[in-house]
Amino acid sequence: MRIVKNRGIAFKLIALIFAGSMLVFGLILGMDYMVSRQIVLEKVKSNARYLTEATLNRIQIVLASIESVTRNQTPYLEQGPVTQEELAIMVRSLVEKNPEVYGCAISFEPNTFEGKSSYFAIYGYRSEGDIRTGTLDAISYQYENKDWYQIPKELNRPEWSEPYFDEGGGDILMATYSAPFYRTVGNEQRFMGVVSADLSLSWLQQLVSSIRIQRTGYGFLISKNGTLITHPNSDLVMNDTIFAVAEARNAPHIREIGRAMIRGETGFAPWTSIVTEKQGWLGFAPLESGGWSLGVFFPEDELMEDVSRLTRNAIFMGLAGFLVLLGVIFLVANSITKPLRELGHSRPGAYRKRVADRQRYPDEHLAQTVPALPG
Image (tube, rainbow, N blue to C red; front, side, top):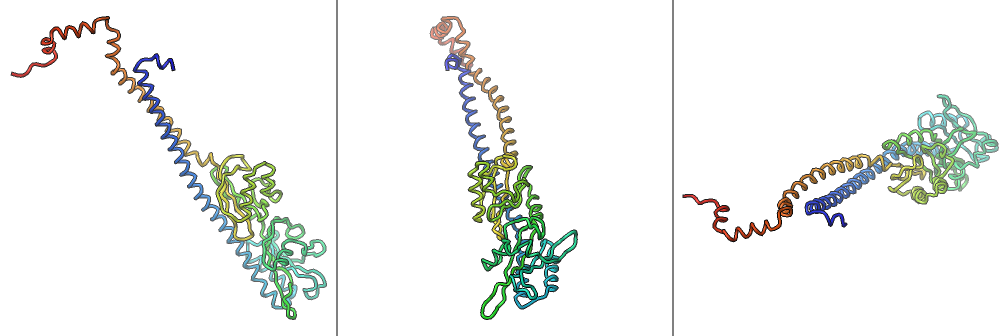
């Protein structure tokens, strides 16, 4: 402060104007960055909504198709007894005509399929470019204990299962849509079994992994219980839930978003990438079928690259402008203060003598300062 106080008028004038200009420029730059950031954020929200909706629609079309063809088999089975050969034709035809279906099974309750005294199920599935059919061994496979059989039976409605590895059946990672079928026995409607269609998760993984946001953005899918169905980190797929990930990382915000996702909510929230640790946003929305939910991660630093670049350019241009302004201010201040500096360096009494001379010879002084009038 003392240094500024001991400086001359020119320095103080330059410093005052320069500081004021810097303050105004800083405020304008800050406001411009905040407005630009908000515009980008709104655009990201819009893109997140469109991208998740487009991806969900692609998935929903496939799932809805599987649901439809599966339910369409039940009226035929409810009409009356069918032979094993007819069942084999049914499952083969369903798999053959629906490329998104990996396999199809028709599974009966004990003692309900004619000629069989125990459980009986026939299964058709894709293998090495062909479609094979066979029976499921009720002793080793025990399909009556599987979720895809038990849940529709207990709820009396079609249901998607949680994703699982079908050991002894398709021997792949899959999710199954099952529809119960019934027959009227006496005056009662009796549960007879389940028609099921399997969706290979490799198809879903390929679809969701095709989502690309800048360089490190990605998509992932969770089940209605929070199980990670697809994710860039393959170690997490089918091994962890989103809640287990939140617990391991001590990240309450991941847990809260996970809860919102399994509740079927749609949203857009801050998110830390599980893959890169980058900060960003997560857009999420539910899938109509299965109770699943899709999340799409948008990395903040990559999305803000254009805004940051424009801000840096504005700073460089502003600094260049300030240097020019500083030079102009210096020249103006120097021209204003030059007479004062000259006066300060003149001999003592010179100013008083000059004034006294003007008082003593006013007419002469007036003649020197006022130009002669014409004619």
